[in-house]
Amino acid sequence: MKRIALFGALGLAVIGALTGGAVTPAAAQASAGDAVRGKSVYARCAACHDLNTGVTRLGPSLKGVIGRTSGTSPNFNYSQALKDKAVVWNADTLDQFLAGPAKYAPGNRMAFPPLANPQDRADLIAFLEQSAH
Ligand code: HEC
Image (cartoon, rainbow, N blue to C red; front, top):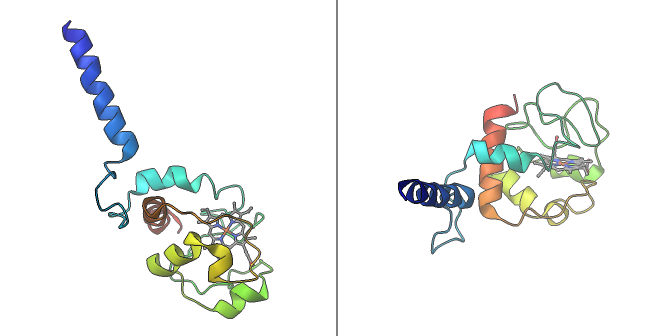
């Protein structure tokens, strides 16, 4: 009997971890990013974006992307749209871009749908701030 109760508690803890405790009434505003969770969100980017070595995949490397001006990683042939945007990538500009890549820089060539969940974006950006060096 004791064992069943223990598993029950574990189950609740797992559900809590999976939802990230993010099921708040005011869900519109993301809470502080969780880099650990952000790593799993980054799995959606990894096919096209290297993080640490500077290697070009389908997209430019994100090595050092925080603080870099859009369209300026060497060895990548950017669209004019991203070069003309000339925005410095930080938590705020990345959040806007990832919420709607096509809308943020019309004509850019990143074939990726909007990352609609604000918490996913916050977690991903926390991961990039920690890891894209
Ligand atoms: C299908 C491939 C693909 C996927 C998946 C993808 N991207 Fe991209 N990304 C690109 C391409 C291609 C560009 C360059 C677009 C251009 O030049 O217009 C780009 C550009 C960018 C830039 C601008 C970089 C710079 O140097 O200015 C950032 C930041 C970025 N992507 C982040 C992400 C993140 C974060 C994800 C995951 C949520 C992601 N991308 C998913 C292909 C992809």
